[in-house]
Length: 410
Image 1 (cartoon, rainbow, N blue to C red):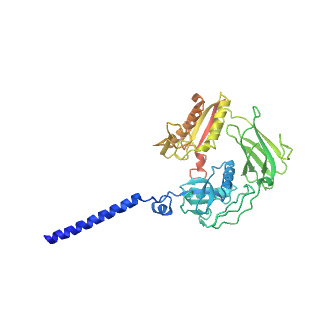
Image 2 (tube, rainbow, N blue to C red):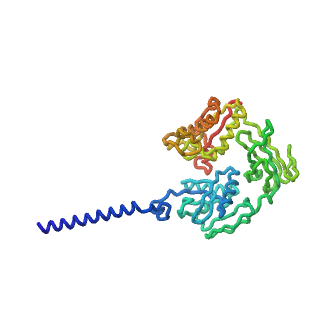
């Protein structure tokens, strides 16, 4: 009996020691500083890796800002964030969890835009996570990335100071020293008032866009370097009908085309407001993923719609909402505080693609109402994914997510 009690006491003592050891570990872990943000923490618990389509890398913050502005002039939704490992600011135009989509978009940019060095970064920009740069053509890892390659940066730009290898850099050239001087004058037909907007230059021989230039200020337009010299100048400002003017870069002539005192070729664009039956896409209105809430960069264009409606009280419109695909899913809706451009105070639900497109159209109508537009002047039409502009698997499929404005009365 004594032996049995002794054994029992030993087992009990061992269990007690294990318990206190476990409690000590829990207490130490509970009071220790968490490892969030460290590489150890990232490796242990993992982060949701994104795939960024990168169009430029810059050592200087100012140069990154300039390049983002240039990309936005070309209708790209560009942003930038620091790659802390390479100590470079990465300018990117797409952030997606879908690696294949990012690869396809980077390939398209290489083929169809001036961003011939576009690549994919897999990781989490702004964090200490070690990511990888991918060549979209070979899908192999890039040991070096092109840095400070833009020919549109100010001449004060300097060579990158990063310590990781980089490819041979292109010379930094002031855009004002290149091409022929042009001045695109954009003005409203009714009263001659200047209108803010851009002009796209299209190479007629190759049927591809070369660049975008700001209106109402002198710019230098690079040669299309084609056989005919033919270019098309396209001005499409939201709220106005598109205007297209074709001319020869080598000998620019046409109705109203003159030269100013500084020898710039002046090309006028008389802009006419949308008329009954016209449908205009709000290219610069963007929504948060799965949300009927606009991103902050949408503010300018939706205010242009307010201005158009205030200018002509007879206007009546229909707002068409579209999604990419028809699958149901999560829907994030605006809350009672009416934060039109923020995910603060939102509510989450579930619904069809048609419901999501309905909410996106409705949030614009609510914004118009909030700005004093009579809701009786607006109608809503939700399409879901029934009227795509591109195939769902296309690299441009994201453009299916859009809002269109149809003029019912003017």
